[in-house]
Image (cartoon, rainbow, N blue to C red):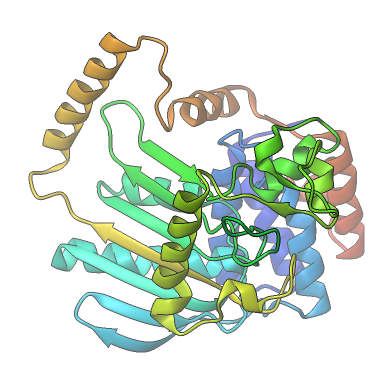
Length: 338
């Protein structure tokens, strides 16, 4: 079965709302699910929806929470997400930061007591489509060790960056581990490089599953990745007074212990100037290294394919979502009338 981007968004919105999210929060989150799913990441996409529905139904996530501004100075605001959907909390922060940047040149909004926000690339795409440049950070549950350590001391704390470009946005989305937990889960029992992490016995993991089953991930570039992860921790929880990632139980969900920070910047010389200079930069890079793939290239190509042919829904995920439809008294066919 193939779904159009509009069907993906409609499906997510109706399921989230039926599970307990407010109409506004379901709409904000559904857009993030649609954007992430059409990037071809292979994880941190529609496959995470069943887990969100479970958190909403159990009450571990507050589906009706509205972020509350608790501090403001100039173009900067701190919000409390009140244990709301991470996708809705961060999307709200992005919209607020965009408004400030358009009015004042830059906007910085940070939200505490949020949850897992899915994929940073979705938010940086929103910023770039608005003709601005931006960064999005999140802290996470502890999943990585420090240099010379074998224990979990910090999250893989991702960062995403987006900027307008002449053909498609320049989009980068990376975590500070060699592989995100989503990547590891998708690899399952496949073999991995020895430097990716340790198993439960604190020996070099041979498969992705060994890291997930009591193991620990390693920071990229050893001390460099660890230092960047710490910096991202300060830019999120350190800035907004939220919980440090290490204070959250590993793989926890629905505790409101994640924080996200969004920085949006206006373009001093305008979008057309940046597009032309970006085109020149790409030309230099490709002249010297013709086969180099730049951030955003693969996501853009996949997105075009999805808009042309639709997103191929994995059979197992289709079955799971149909089961949720029955649980929430929704008709599958109605969810696809988009």
